[in-house]
Length: 95
Image (cartoon, rainbow, N blue to C red):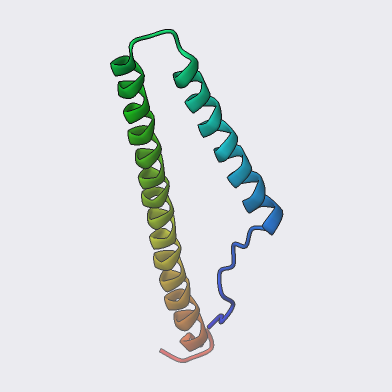
């Protein structure tokens, strides 16, 4: 049976790039809403909509990640079962 763990490691630079990208995008939307020529209630509504969209995006990313991890676990269990069957099988055994 294989004891190699499934590793998916990202570099620190990847995390920093993702964080900076998120911060720039959120700041750009915030500046756009603040500088927009509209009533205060319209800007407030757009601000709440951006916050809702942001939290929904985080939730979706977590759900997708959890589903992928669950699929990997099932795949590893199936692989371990197959390896066990192959290890126990003796093709030269008399029937």
